[in-house]
Image 1 (spheres, rainbow, N blue to C red):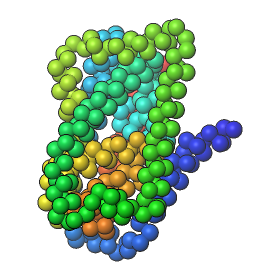
Image 2 (image 1 turned 90 degrees about the horizontal axis):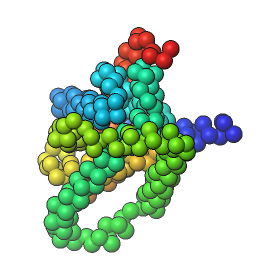
Image 3 (image 1 turned 90 degrees about the vertical axis):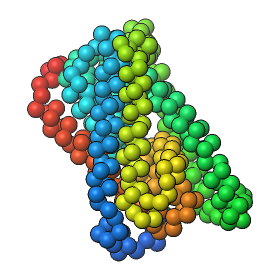
Length: 327
C-alpha cells in the first residue's frame, strides 16, 4: 500500500509530465534546439530575467515572516528564505509537497508552531489566488479586442479555432483539468484532517487570521504585488531572448503568464508538460510558429527549473550547517 501511495505521489506526475512532453516534442528535430540555444537566443535577456525569479521567492519569505509576527512567531529571515527555496525545489520531485516542507523547516530550525505555520500558508495561498483571479479578469478583458481583431483578419471563428485542436490536445486538456481538480480536493482534505483536534484547530485559526493583524498592511500589499510582478518579469523578459517573441508585447506576455499560472495547478513537477502545452497554445494564438513556440517553452521552463533546483541545493547545504532548534 505504501508503494502504491509513493507511486501516486511521484510516479503518476512524472509519467503525466513525460507523456505530455513526448507528445509535444515527438516531431521536433533536436538540431533545432541546439541552434536556438547557440544562435537564435539572447542569453543576456535570459540572465536578466533570472534575478526576478529569486526576488519573487525572497519576497514570499519576507511576507511570510510578516504574517507570522502577529501569531507571536519571529523566525529568522534567512531561515524563512531557505524554507521557501526548499519548498519550490522539493515540488520538482513531489508536486505540492513544498508547502508542508517549508512549515517543517521552520518547525525544526526555529521551533515555530507547525499548525500555525500551516494556517499562514493557507492564508497566503488564498490571497495569491484572489490576486491572480483579479489579474486574470483584467488581462482577458483588455485582450478581447485583440482576439476579435485576430478572428476578423484571419477569417477564423472561435469554433474553427477550437476545431484545429487535435483529439490528443483535447485529451491532454481534459486530463490536466481533472488532475488539477483532484489535487485541490486532496489538499483540502489534508487540511481538514489536520484540523480534527480543538488545539490544532485553534492554532490553524490563529495562522489564518494573523494576516488581519499584520503591523503594516500597506507593506503586506506591496510584498504581495511585488511577488507577482517579479514572477511576471521573470517570465516576460524571456520574450526578448528570441526574435519571434520579442515583438509580441506586454499584454500578450501577460496572457501567456496568466494561462501558465493556472496550468501549474496540474500536479506535475513545476507544471512540466501542462505549462508547456498551455503557454505554447497562447503563443501560437498570437502568431508564433508551432516549432518556435515549442522551443521557447522548453528552453524557458528548463532554465527556470534549473534555477529553482540550484536554490534548493544551496538552501539544503546552508541548513545542513545550521544546528536544529529541536535537536
